[in-house]
Image (cartoon, rainbow, N blue to C red):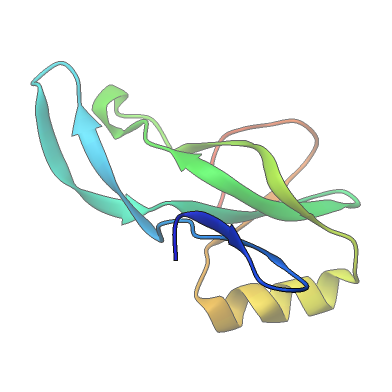
Length: 100
């Protein structure tokens, strides 16, 4: 199946679970990192891409949601734990990675 496809009833999007950490100052790969992070920010919950900031010696950040969760927070937390995703609890629109 291609990266984006569909079945009879579903849109299917393949997203890599890992991505490369890259140091642009040294022009080299410095390993792999999780590509997806779960974010809980007030009533907003969902999945975001992780942004590598290690080359600046900063905590990783994340993008805006690429998938929003509209269920209950405890259900989302259980889903994320089952999938093995890091979960960030954010107070507002703060894109610094704070593990919870």
